[in-house]
Image (cartoon, rainbow, N blue to C red; front, side, top):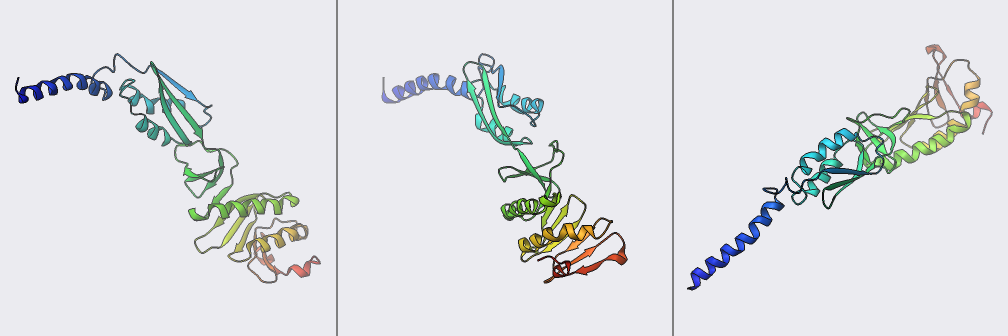
Amino acid sequence: MNAALRILAWTLALLLVTLPVVAVVNGWIGAGHWPLRTLRVEGRLQRVDAQRLRATVLPYAARGFFAVRLADAQAAVARLPWVERAEVRKRWPDVLEVSIVEHRPFARWGSDRLLSQHGRLFPSQGARMPVGLPLLDGPDSRVADVVALYNESRALFAPSGVDVRALKLDARGSWSLVLSNGTDVIVGSSEARLRLARFARLMPQLLSQKQLPLTRADLRYTNGFALSWPSPTAARAVAPQSQGTT
């Protein structure tokens, strides 16, 4: 046998060995012989829709044990609403395991996203919105700053029995809040913590002077606040030192 025939023989032998393996791995044959029959989900699903998860994984599982593309399946699961992290594995002979860590919501963020307790933003579209979440907003790069001021503000107003329902940092760097008693608080862009601390300290005294709710407080004054009550004629500027409190 000459060299050309030997090369051809070896090539044919190699193809006979490798082609069946390639066919099985790519799902061309064998999917019916080694099907993935069981979907096993690790972790308790509270917000991820189980039927939608099954429908997402099924097309990948249909390729069979050897041909299933785990990375593609994992990426598809990770795109589902409320999924923070996902891992897809296979177990012989017929099990596809999906491990999911759900986002734990901390607040709404802007008009169409949520903020997780780990500080990650994710879309709210398709998600069942939990009741009672505060509304936060600001540049994505300032998430940590917004959360920090929100937490500090809650602590400042808590002694008065008032909570913070919304907090926003606009594109110009100006802060504003909405309190649980309905008061809109305009803080401004400088000395936000100092202004809030001063206002929170004096708010019980200010509220005691009126039977009507305080609708708006503008803290952007060096020596006082501009307060607005329901009656337009009642709006007036109030200096902190005039309240008899230091």
